[in-house]
Image (cartoon, rainbow, N blue to C red; front, top):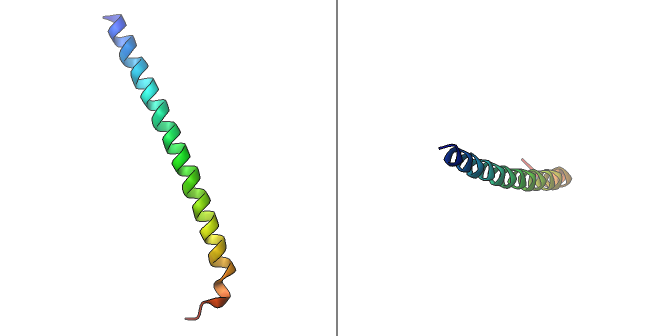
Length: 50
């Protein structure tokens, strides 16, 4: 019984670690893209006429 619980907890731990890494990578990529596009918008704000 204890071995079954240990194996289940081990699998859940590995899955949580994998999801955390994917989330971190996605967040860093999204943040970088937002900074780049924001800088481009600020650079070209003079060209926009409303």
